[in-house]
Length: 356
Figure: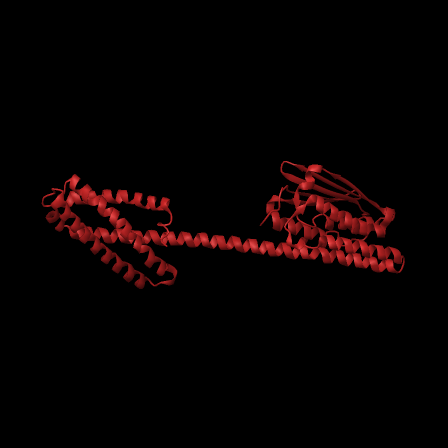
């Protein structure tokens, strides 16, 4: 389907563009053929309207012969031939219209005076047709550019979606590996605790089923996952692991990527509390203001303890997921000073599930 015929607004603009072309033709006819202004206007306006629609046909050979895949000779031959034929048809229509004006409009001798300058009409018709060809090639180039941009955007969305899924897939295996290692250590020292830890681990994994298909979940649900994780870890650390939560109630309904907080809490446990003989605390703060969620997780750690990839898989995973999902709309930062390690996150506070 012709693009101008499917868009009334663009068709109107196209016809409007023919007004100055009609004015030029009126000027040529009055200046060279001896037609007066009244005759030239009455003859030219309907002719230009007819030819404007005739030039719409140039779209189809332009679409069939893309510039990048067609040779110059072929393009010139096709479009020059088309322009010559369409212009001949236009000249014949002009002659017929002039005869009609003589018979029924009282424009005596108009057909004879116009017949002397049919070559001017033919050349004008050729030029107008070739101008239409140029316009359609520009339109095709604009469409190709827009389609390329849409394909590129779609490719980026698909790539980002694949990256998010791959990064989310790392979370559970990483946590599961750590838990199995802990259970293995407990089996030789406290079999009852190892069994309880297996049950709690199974409960946590059950809660995470289906999260891989979700782009976001309520913060309240994410907090529930954190509590399930801590229940597993407290089997191992007991009173050495203390958790303090300062969470705004209005923030609980905000949507966040699933398993966003659990890797951060896990990092605080494995790289902080685990190295402290007397244990320590983890503080989680969540505030919502100005359309953003401000999340901070702070924990004690031993600066003298051997480095164990402090910014390892857990933190890197969260950082990459935020970047892939929100781009520059989210921030992620860490600080370590005076025996305290702090992770600060800012991300848009969304009220419903966000789609990429």
